[in-house]
Image (tube, rainbow, N blue to C red; front, top):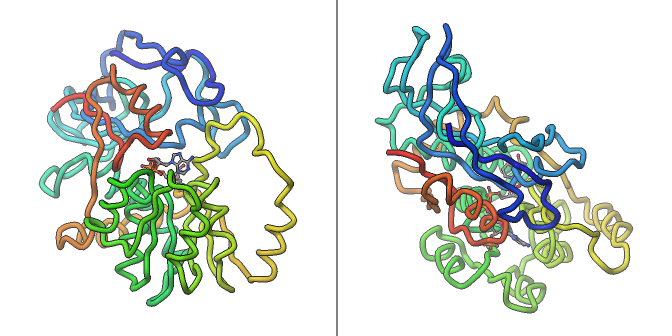
Length: 335
Ligand code: NDP
């Protein structure tokens, strides 16, 4: 199998030289195992965290190992009665094009339901993240205002669309005019601001005349700074990601703002609640039923940004962390 190995821990933004492509022999599938051909690999921001040694909610990728990835794969050969050659499955794997895995690690997908790669995006982990983060923490109500950054990305695009379906007013922040146009014209956001244009704080205040009731945190950084002063009493802040700092090597300059933040949480009775999507695994059946319905009735749209082949995977990953992706980032390896 061809695989991509992490060979150096990235300092700041990952570089191509932090990775290498290698070929490794695969064993024959033993009893209970299957040989898989990866069709689609997912690229997600959490992978950057696994490349560092800092303590987190999951162990880091060891040097010389391949980073993790969820994958949609075709069964080429099966030694298990539960799967047949030709079946398409979802599996937590690594950056490689073939694998021998236990059949019990693989979850069969129904290609009749729609494009199988949706299991990595709108009908998969990012979709559940948006759905459950809003259901359990954000709780947008009719007439309330929700703000989300990375607004056209895998999670943000769904956060905004689900909040619209709940009756909220939705203001996105995204990188560049094309993404902002997509958010308002295709995704139905009420407004979307370009994070690369100066004075985000004043522009966000103008776009949120009634303040902010839900700030769905995906980015940290400038967007967080712009949103904080606008939070209404009893606002909810699902803390889902802080991508603006994933490549950071030093703390941000300036005075310590923690005391002011704690005072804001206190005086505005804020709910600031972090979560990892796995906490809400029990919501998966409900999420799948609801989201499939929204997709088939056109109430939710999803956009994919597809790189082709393992040779393009590293640059697609580096690009996603910089905002060069436009939609859910995927790597297509085979038809
Ligand atoms: P996206 O598809 O949104 O891709 C990442 C986006 O982040 C980029 O396109 C870019 O969008 C934005 N971005 C990059 N750098 C910055 C910056 N400095 N400031 C603001 N925005 C920036 O990724 P996902 O939807 O997969 O993930 C979004 C967030 O959700 C991440 O923080 C991720 O870690 C988190 N997450 C958390 C989960 C959990 O369980 N808690 C599960 C899944 C995701 P643009 O250029 O348009 O601003």
